[in-house]
Amino acid sequence: MNCNSNGNDQLFDKMKQATKSWQMTCAGTEDLKAITEAVAQSIEPGDIILLYGELGAGKTTLTQLLATALDVGEDQYVSSPSFSLLHEYRGKIPIFHMDLYRLRDEDDVEAAGLLEVFTQNGLCIVEWPDRLGSSVPPVRLDIEIMKDHATDRQLILTPHGASWTTRVSRMTCLTPVYKST
Image (cartoon, rainbow, N blue to C red; front, side, top):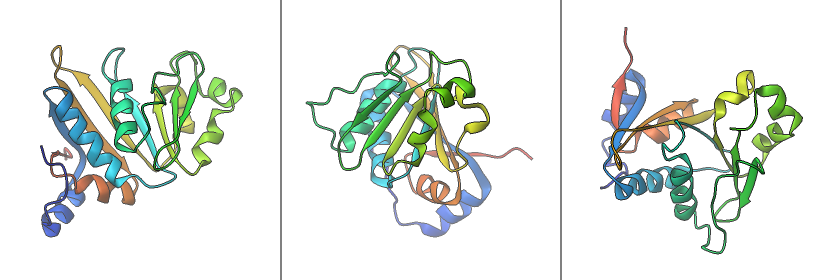
């Protein structure tokens, strides 16, 4: 599956103006790998990705594939930081992987000193971002993962900020989800 821009810039410009989110059905790990590689190609230092989904939806799997696409070596096992709250990995850029599942709310997140990670010059990936409350960064990419079957996943990518909107709109493997009027 190809997930890069096909050069039809006028179509993409119209899509990004008319859409809010993009979606993809992943019929297994190869499809999920395609979207993570496309996202990895568009990553810039300072980016933030928030991952939404139930337990077992594939948030950590998506993070593992994204880390691989960003050249995190096999010597750095990417796992969910449920107990440590934060793991850091070295690849093309630093990756800061947070799991806020055990925290109650934004006060707990702040008390743990995790809000400072958003100012780092790397990629910040957050699982269970609902715990951030009003501390959700305004410029970010939200990825919602929903299980359809044992191996199928539905991904909905919602960019926040002009830069993310442009980058996501150029990923041709995604289908635009139009705003309701």
